[in-house]
Length: 327
Image 1 (spheres, rainbow, N blue to C red):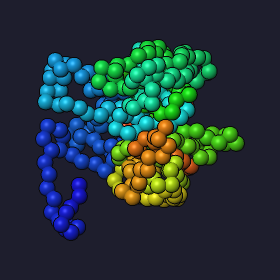
Image 2 (image 1 turned 45 degrees about the vertical axis):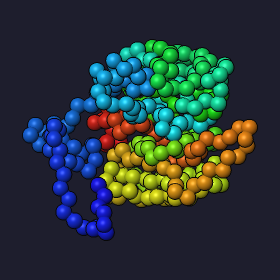
Image 3 (image 1 turned 135 degrees about the horizontal axis):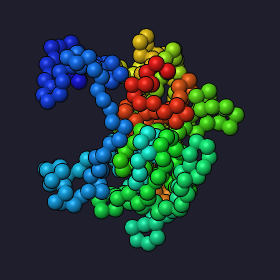
Image 4 (image 1 turned 90 degrees about the vertical axis):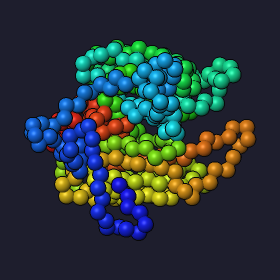
């Protein structure tokens, strides 16, 4: 909530209607004083993305007077947040439900007129057993093209999805499950959290990516670099109740001090396009996308990023939100 007209200190009033009237500085701390209970969090999100349900009778029944909204529980989205190149993400399916998977992109370089590019999708269990491996078309995910195309039967527990041979992509499942991007680590690192965990993302608008700061963490390190010299990243590092650090520029590195009492909680990165960014056209035969291609690296915290607070989990030790705060 921002104050305007130079009034940095002011009386601000707002009203909540239809939900319990209690506020907390972080989701982990919220409870209902009337019952003493914390909220129950369903690990599955059944809401379909509007892109795959843009049939007018369905629209008016489910979302009257709403034309479009972006999916939240997906790894990337059509608003300019996609994964660059080869990447991995982990899914947690605690009840062993059948999942419908889609891996696609928003504006592919091919596929509108002719054969779409294809990418390799491989799904495996922690023991290495391959559950699914297939070349899938990386097509425009929007409107009638937005339906999930593959069926996953992972069974109970965590599984790893690897996407390769793709310029840029995003992915989602129906229903949405706990899901995290898995950072790439250097070969000499024994585990992602012991070294740098690398993520390559596009930034077309501000979007939160959630990560966990374990109990007892006093500091961690963040660095970021944009692909093109004319790009400027606006990358905020946020604890549950404040912006702790900021990188504004083509590249930068910060050591992030963890304020007292804010360890053992889920924080988030908020990348955005810096206002000083310029987008020269580049090669006319292969023009660049109008977004910032950003490499983000973390060290000192687990190397996993989630689309929402509820979805973050450790693939080695899956746990519901109420079970992760003390780690």
